[in-house]
Length: 114
Image (tube, rainbow, N blue to C red; front, side, top):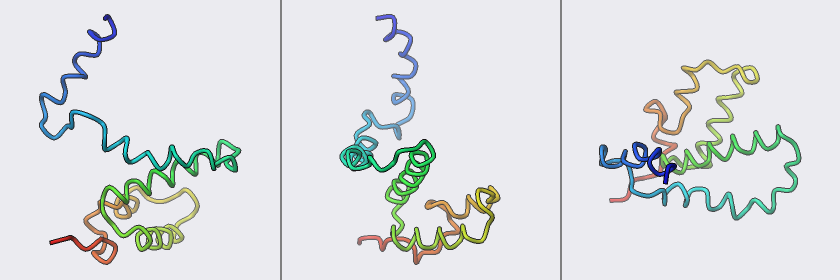
């Protein structure tokens, strides 16, 4: 009971903002393929490998959520990242490379259904 009372302010957040969903079904759905595929990932046997996989999976899910064409977007992203030294990409440039960036060309976005 004490835990519930302590969590009450966080549980009421959705009442203050109509954009906050009542459940986390979208988040659960987005990680489903990750959870289903994890039994095949025994080849990731290091912390750095796991970190790299998590990083790439995070980008892939962001791409899906923001509707760019995945193959075209990843090709563009990797070609752009080659222009910089390893792990030294200016923050402003990273913002331009994000899937939700307004700077991103329409050629990397899915055609919207009518």
